[in-house]
Length: 148
Image (cartoon, rainbow, N blue to C red; front, side, top):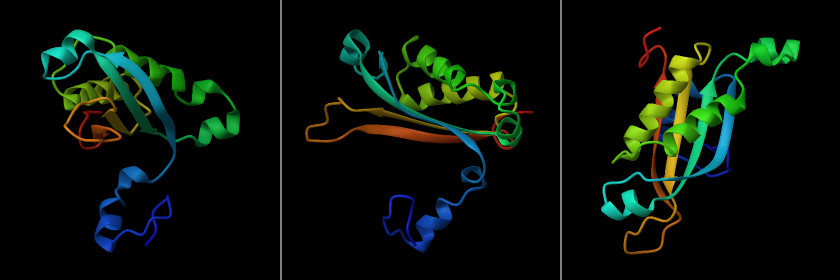
């Protein structure tokens, strides 16, 4: 089976990637860059570093597609603002905590969003060898994680 990049993946990987959350309409924000002070090491909290963020927000976009009206969707800039506020705001030790705060704020502020995926990467982390980045990715859905 091929994924969206043309890479062959096993049936078990395909079934793991076939969550209900991956179906349907979504807003996509890719490659957001922020300077923040998150991490467990003192240097990370003092000098900070660049963080790369991707956000997907699932919601029904049918009405917006028909009306061509921003009021029938959620603005990309609103989601960007939340990501920026969290990433440039108070320090967290763990990226898991940063991502959780972003996803919670999005789901609380925008009730028409039914699920969120937040991916955060550190491209400049020192681990003793060459890397592109290290990071985390979380999925949160309104029916499982956030009370309606």
